[in-house]
Image (cartoon, rainbow, N blue to C red; front, side):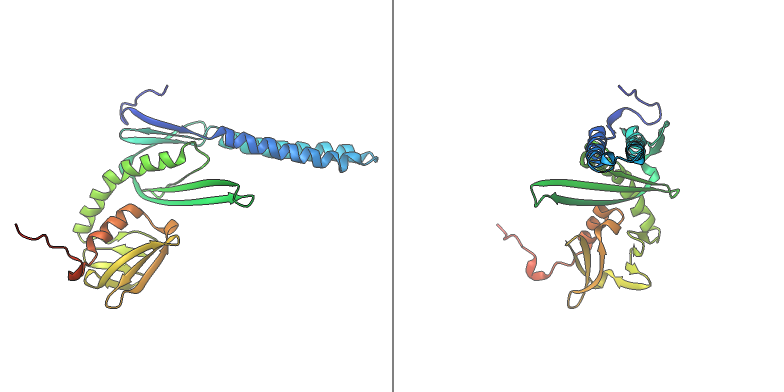
Length: 252
């Protein structure tokens, strides 16, 4: 059981590395390599056949073992005020307000003609000091962990970004897209809020439209978007609703 921290508060949840996912592929691959070597090199009658078999098998086992041990101690522990991130012997602690960006990526993979399906997730966190952490299916319950981290971080990040925008700052949401009180900017191009005509998320990307003909002003792949939930909320607040789409309740 992990004890509460005097600075970070009580423990909410912990997410160690998925050790079953680490061990199983290593066992399968080493078994396959063993069978292949036994019916090939091990059958060679010359002296170098058995020797080379042992050398190659040892290299395979050492390589797979290194990978298992490398990820074995990875763990993320969520606290009330922050979280710890461990990739080695010692964990590194971060407060939630130290995280300035989250990028998320999700895929649904199919194997053997769709008989086996698996969801993969990756969350890339960047701190105000430029430190980068990647959280993926190496950890157990990665989808749950990502949702918990986003909830905690966005609760403090969004008010901060709103304050910065109110001060006249341009808020980055990708390597090129910026939002301000005046509108959107991308590599020198500007789209005032008066000309903004909505957005659409489909096919793994977000498209931003401009008036008067709802032309596509910009498309960005979703994995390249910073703080996607915040961006979507802010764009939704600025969406133009045509008069014909406004419902007026009749007076009683």
